[in-house]
Structures are given as structure tokens and as C-alpha cells.
Amino acid sequence: MNMKKFIIIVLIIGVIAGGGYVLSNKKIGSSAPGTNAASVWEKGVEGSPVSAETLTAGNSKSFKDTARGFSFLYPKRLDATTFPDGNSGDIVLVQSPEKGEGFQILITPYGEGGSNLTAEMIQAEIPDLKISDAQELLLGESGKGVAFISDNDSFAGNSREVWFVYGGNLYQISTYARLDPLLQSVLGTWKFE
Image (spheres, one colour):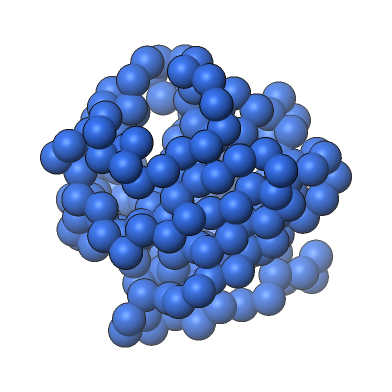
């Protein structure tokens, strides 16, 4: 499946589910088995009213995808749901609908090989997608991804996107730009097992 189909699916799911959510990341960190995928943001989204929070066992829940070998912590006030994307992937929706916060992760097989993903590659596949403030993500020795700001209508026209390839899957993480610090906190706990 090509990236254009992926983005169309993301937009449809976002409208149906009532939203998704995004982030700005400079480095996801080491992705060696059993290590933390620590996030380090070079800069956040201007005007973001949400501040980063430290996620610990006491104030968070744990999400684990055993099939793909990753896990992360997220705030207790949110709920996580996984459902098929209608093709061969899954969507992880982590949200609190009444508070309008959360994020979504679209995970799809990435059969085109390679583990490096750049803004230029995304733009070549999806020319209509607005990409600004693109920042390279380092996935340890496993490749590179990209974080960027977009105009995703599912996120009120101002989203933060983090896309990367790992273990043969494309991960598209999206949230409202204003929730950048929330996503920073979550990705700071992300681990590939």
C-alpha cells in the first residue's frame, strides 16, 4: 500500500473518531531491543498551553503491542483503543474525548523496504500534504524518521506528525499541535522490545 492511501485512511479515521493528535520531535533515540525510545524535542509548538509531564508507573497506564514489540506509557486520564484500519494495519487511538486531548498511531506494513523516511520522500508520495518545520528523527541504529507540522483537517488544521519506519511497519503518529508536550512525554517512554 502506498503512502497516499495511508494518509487518506488517517484523514477518514480522524473524522470518524473525532480527532487524532500530533508532536514535534528531534530524536526518538535508540531503538535497540529492550531500550527506551527517549524523545528529545529541539523546540515545541509555539503557544502550546499544555506542558510536558513526567509519566511514571504511579500516574500512567501502559500500552503494549506484543505483535510488533513496542510499548509506551500514557496518562491515566486517557483511554487506549486498538482497531483495524480497514486494510492490513491497525490504529491505536489514545484519547479523552470529553477533554479533547490524545493522539493516534496508524501502523501499516511498509513493504517498500528501508528504514529511513524523510520529508522529501513523504512529499514525493503525497504532494498535496503540507509539511513545515520538518525535523529529522533518529531511531538509533535502525534508521531515521521525520516530525513535522501539517494542516491535517482532522486536527483542526494544525497538527503535529511523527512518521517513522521500524520492523517493516510505517508508524504515523498524529496529534493536535497544541498537544505537542503530551506526545513528547509519551514518546519519551516508548520502547521497542
